[in-house]
Figure (cartoon, rainbow, N blue to C red):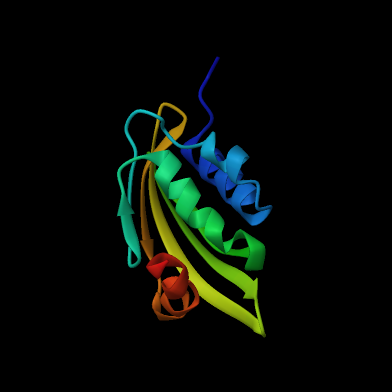
Length: 126
């Protein structure tokens, strides 16, 4: 059976994140060779990454896609994370993902982390 195109893998991963189905999102990440880097953290395994990103689940309303394009096995996604606490927040995020054998093996994220840090700093201190 043919592997899905890298763009399809990333599309499905983002859809699962937007639906707050983190268990399903985990299925698109490599279990053997995975790494991610962002302004708020670095993870060398998919399970730790999913555990961390799932913390935004209770406040995540949706992920709005602005742009998704691929070049070979690399996919770039420009999205807005729409969250709600005391008010609605829209946080632009750029993901650069590497896909191999139908799984995401690396994610590099670019965004202004100041709001995220403020929201979750107290949680991390405990």
